[in-house]
Length: 227
Image 1 (cartoon, one colour):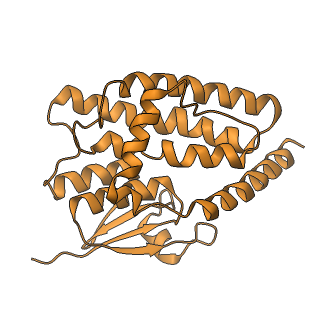
Image 2 (cartoon, helix red, strand yellow):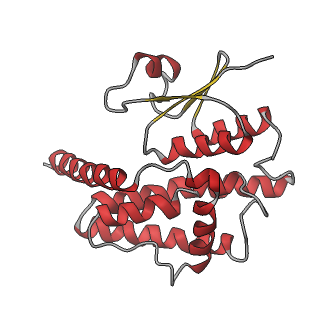
């Protein structure tokens, strides 16, 4: 039976891209629908009324939201080339570090991009401390999933592409130092060179310009809220 798959995303969202990568790695054909996250469509609001965010995966008439939930749904629906480990402990660890990457590293690195002064320094310190933990996880590994890209690779795959952009957009800040984090640097290079990943990344110049603009807007809104 032919199934229909569509994905609502945003052109430079790392959350949407991890879903794109998973679908491409699995060989799943899908329709991509670009969303304007600043002027959300009726379709997005109807499909995801709880969070009103991308990504949203629609498989036939079934709607799945939240990128990590979507990754697991994809892995179970299309079981070829498994993403999650089969071992229960390894599976639990993959989920733990995926959540850690978003809640600790991504939030602090993104805040470091737009904030200034002491807040910026604090966010940078938190991001570096998170990277130190991820460095230990990646040490000695080709891909985290073994010899091929797995769930956790996709979950934290944004690190090597988005953090350097955020560093540049945020001015004089350095978080991802290849000398300090050689395992992350080596893994990121391999990950970003994989054909599926390399062919499915947002244009760097456009992403940088967008992030620079967003950093200014978020900081201005932050200052206004403090007054």
